[in-house]
Image (cartoon, rainbow, N blue to C red; front, side):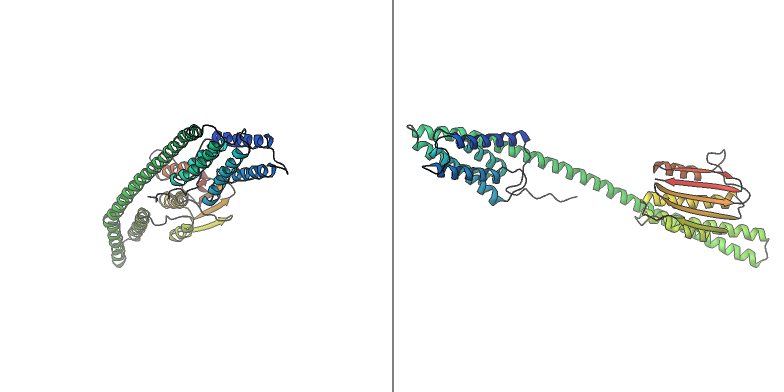
Length: 384
C-alpha cells in the first residue's frame, strides 16, 4: 500500500475552473486601465506620481499573486498585500474610480490559494484598510463600512466552501485508490501463498517421487548391465532414467517459478543442447535483447518441447537450434535432419505439446508453425 501524500502547502495550486482565472485577469486588467484614465491621472505633477506608483504596485501585486502554479507563501502574501495597499491608495486618490474591485480580488484569491488563517488575515487587512478609506470619503461612514463588509463576506465563505469540497473530493479519491491498492495487495498475497503451497506440494510429492524413480532406474540399469542383460533392455532402462531425470529437472524449474525465481529463458538453450543425447547445435544471431518473462519462458519451453518430440518421434541424425534477434521480433527455429518426424500439430492421436506451444505464442501476440521438410522436421516460433 502506498503512503498517503502529504497535505498541500499553504500556497499550492488548487484545481479551480479556468474561467474563474480568466475572469480575474480580465477584471483586474479593467481596474488598471480605468485607473490610468481616471482623474487624477498618473503624471509628474500633483497627485500624478502617487497614482502612478499605486498603479505600478497594483500591477506588481497582481503579477505575483495571480499565478496558478505552486508559489512560495511569501510571494503570494506579498502580492496580495501589494494589491490591497494599491487599492487603498487608489480609492483615496481617485474616489470616482473602480479600485474597490481589487478588494474582491484579494478576498477571492486569498480564500482560493491560502489556508484559512492566512486567507482570513489577508482579507481582514484589505477589508479594514479599504473600509477606513471609503468611510473617510463618504458622508455615511457606518453604512459604507457595513456595505463593504457585507458584500465581501459571502464571497469569502463561498470560495472557502468550494475549496473544502474540492479537498474532500481529492481525499475521497485518495482513499478509493488506497483501497484498490490494498485489495490488489491482498489478492497478490493470497496468490503468492497459494503458489507457495503448490510449490511445497510439488517438492514433497512430485519431485521426491521423480528423484526416487531416477535412482531406482539407475540402479536397475547398473544391475541389468552387471548381469549381462539384453543390451536393448539396458538401453531402454537408460532412456527411462534420462526421462525421469529430465522430468525431475523440469519439476524443479516449475517449483522455482512458483516460488518467484527467475524463469528459464534463451540463455538456457545451450544447456538443453548439451543434455540432448545426439548431435545438437545452437546458433544465435542478431543483437541479444532482454525479453519479458513470459516471452523468455516461451522460447525455452518451445525448444525444450521440440527436442523432446525429436527424441520420442524421430530418428534424426542431428538437430539445429537457431535463435535470431530481428528488428521486429525474436525468432526461434528448431530443425532436425533425418528419418521420421514429430507428431504434427493437431494431428489425430497426437499429443498436446506443440498445440500448447502454439497457444502460448498466440497469447503473446506471436505465432508458431511446425511441419515436415525435405530432410526432417521444423518448428518455428516468432514473438514480437
